[in-house]
Length: 232
Image (cartoon, rainbow, N blue to C red; front, side):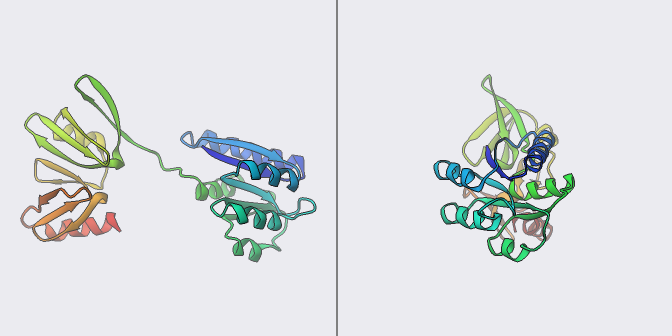
């Protein structure tokens, strides 16, 4: 969950930022967030001392401390915080750049610009799963965690970063369900995740867990190009 703080002394502007966050959340159901609103810099900094926030939406002109000074104070104890400025002035671009702000939004803030800023600080990639049944137990496997799949007669061994699954299925059915261009078949019995390739030679492709598979004859050049495409 992302903990988000809004700090703006204009209640209407703070309410607009909260409304935009709600719209962003509705459009990105996988992003979980909690939002607190502050109208003074002191209230924000006091709350941050006990429980730092992940993302700060700061007005430049607040009160005794401006947004830049607030950000500098936050950076002293929370270097990893993401900071987005919301302001009616473009006079503080250089300062925002200096403290590594994620974005600098000029009021009135457009929804598209706000969404772009939030995309920069939130992980919005959809997580896709492969659902399998093993010994009567149904499991959801994060597709990106799969290293490779090996065929063992009517069963397939799905090896992931953390464990392996032994399921009754066809390779074609699993390939169709995964449906990702970075999964590549090595012949009829092996399907590998190109993002999990550690090394490739003309004869052997090595995976992150140390497993090695033979490179089918005549495919080294095209396979090595695919590995470069998805590994680096």
